[in-house]
Structures are given as C-alpha cells and as structure tokens.
Image (cartoon, rainbow, N blue to C red; front, top):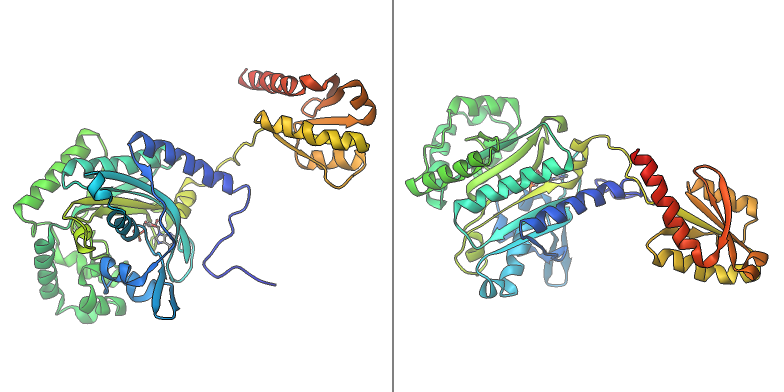
Amino acid sequence: MFKRVTGTRDILPGETELWQNIENISRSIFACHNYREIRTPLLEDEPLFNRSLGETAEIVQKQMFLIQREHDLFALRPEGTASIVRAYIENNIDKQQGFVKFYYMGPMFRAERPQKGRLRQFHHIGCEAIGSYGPGIDAEVIALAHTLLKAYGITGYCIALNSLGCAADKQAFTASLREKLKDRLSVLCEDCQDRFERNILRVLDCKNEACQNVIKELHIAGSQRCSDCESHFTAVRAGLDSLHIPYEVAPNLVRGLDYYNRTVFEFKHSGLGPQQDALGAGGRYDGLVKQLDGPDTGAIGFAFGFERLLLAAGEQAPAQQADLVYLITLGDSAKTAGVKVLADIRSAGIRADTDYEGKSLKAAMRTANDLQARFVAILGDDELKDGVIALKDMSNGSQEKILMTGLVGRINELGRLRKMNDAL
Ligand code: AMP
C-alpha cells in the first residue's frame, strides 16, 4: 500500500473547511489593506534561492528539495519572497507601479526532520510590500499580521521586534559577535560551531540551553545601529505604539536569511512548544530587489505557517455546511426528469445531491440520513405526471407534496424559517 511521503499531510474534508475559513478571512483582510494575490510557480531555478537567501543559510545548505533535469537544477520553493521578487522584476511590475502590495498562500518545501508543527511540505500565508523604504509600511505590515491573527481567533501570542540595521551595521555586528564568541566556541552546540563559521548571526536564534546561556552573557543590545537605522526603528515603534499594538524589543532576533535588514519580527505562541514557537515571521529586505537585478528599492513582508495557525487556533467547531437537499427518483421517467430538477436546485445556489446507483427508496433514505441531508425530495413517475414532488424536512419529519415549479422557493422558505427559529 502506498503511503504519503514523510513530512507531508493529506488535508481531508472536515479539515479543509477550517483551511478555507482562514483563507477567506485572510483574503478579505488583505483586500481591505489593498493587497492583491500573486501566484508563482512551485518550481524555480535553484540559483534564485542560493543568491537571495544566501549560500550559508540553513535552508539553502540543507533543506532544499532539488531536481536535476539535464543541465538545469531546479528547487521546490522553500519560501515565497525570492519568487515574488523574481516575478516582480521579470514582469516589469516596477516599471508600471512604484509601490505594490502582494499576498500569497500555498505550499512550501523544506527537507527538515518532521515533527509536530514542522513538516516537509507546509503552507505559507503571507504578503510582500515592495517599493518603499518608509517606516510607515513596516508598522502597517506588522499591524496587518496582528489583525489577521485576531480575526483567526488566535490569542496568547507575542510580537518580538528588532532592527538589524543596514548592511554596514550588520557587518559590524557580525564582526563584534565573532570577537565575543571566539573564546566560547567550545561551549556552543555542534550546529552553532558550524554557524560560527558560516552564518554567525544564527547562533543568536539557537534554542539549545547551553548556547542560550552564552548568548545571555553577551548582553546584546541594538547599539550597533547607525543613526539612520536607529531613527527608522524609532519610527516603526512609534507607528505600532500609536496603533496600541503590543510588542517586545528582542535584540537577539536576527532571522537566518541574508536578505533581511532593518526591521525583523516574529509572532511567537507558547502553545506551539519551545522548538517551533513561531506562528510567523518577517522583515525588511531592502537590498534584495537590486541584488536580483531589479531597481534599488525597499521592501518588507511576512509569512505565517498555515499548519501552526491551525494548531494555535486549537479545537474549533467543525465548520457548518449549508443545508443539503437529497433527491430520490423512483422510476425511469422520474430519473430522467430528476437530472433537470437537481440542476435547477443547484443553480439556485443550494447544496444538492442524488443517488446514482438506482437504490431502493429505503436504501436511498438511509444514504440521505448518512449524508445528514436537511431535505429529501422524492420524485416518482406518478408525481411527475402530475407535476408535483414530495419534500420531506428531515429536521422535523414533516412531509408535503408541492408543485415541482415551487420546489426551490419552498426549500428557501423552510431554510429561512429554520434560520429565524435558530436566531430565536
Ligand atoms: P520562515 O520563512 O522560516 O520564517 O517561516 C515562516 C513561518 O512558516 C514560520 O514561523 C512557521 O510558522 C512556518 N514554518 C516554517 N517552516 C515550517 C515547517 N517546516 N513546517 C511547518 N511550518 C513551518
């Protein structure tokens, strides 16, 4: 028997409705903030990620799913930002609009060790605002993420915020960190010893207790920022303060990718466990568009992990489905006429289904029950001759014979009545 690939999941009906709920909420909130959806391919040229995330990034080093086809090396996208910037440049969007806002949803692929909240195919929901260096958009993007979480019904998270400064600040910070850590190298975990060489900022993110202790002793503060970056960070914080959005300044928050500069942030949720407590994260990437041969422009974005949003949202009532009408036909003429009856009900926007197996009335009624149909419409050859149909309301067992032409109207009426009763 075939099994799904480790670290991937089947999302089945029952759960898909919860996904759709988050998707729908997100679409409407993104739209209110004037973001438009972008969909990029799952497959990209591998060098795109190598060049943008940085060859020392953990994702590029260890986690890319690569596909070699003759002379080409492709990668299943591990994140969305690089692809979106590629699409922005390739489609000349910068020449049509100075400033654009995109949102996206879809699968990402990383060859990680699978565990709760950590998959090999997972899903991002995120956005990118490209074309501005202004701190106003930083505050708006963080506020937007906060608004989304509230709308999903997620509470109990905190926002960690930092500024990495500009490229020169990052370089100075890296050098001073190297100086401070070089004598403590033996205390660090194996991964961090490797990070010391390749991607030293990432040591600050390490969850290992020994590494955390060393980091605490370093007393890192954001003192390495130049005055321009400091004022930018002050303005971002003022923007968040004016919106009454709570956050904690976290000088250790660095994010592991080369392209980040200035503002970085993470939404942490304690209910997810210590190893993967991030619901989502993001930051500014002012150098990336130029680095991928586009114009010199500022940009910022974030992504939530869909699966983690669902974990944090916890047990939710299964999404309510619309009332189902189940049509049972008895006899050949009724069966033929039933095709049109079913189509008419559906085209009125009502969920409807029928039996395709020629079951007996009793067996078909059992199926209607299994499907939790609200109404059963029964059409026999005799009824058809008289232009009538039987309609049974399964919520109270009442049954009536009505004109076939009045069927949709009557279902709507009863459906509405039920809703009024529910409201009472
Ligand atoms: P990142 O690009 O790593 O900052 O990812 C943004 C968000 O995606 C994280 O905060 C997680 O919520 C989620 N995420 C990242 N990697 C995984 C993974 N392997 N499995 C599930 N969710 C993930």
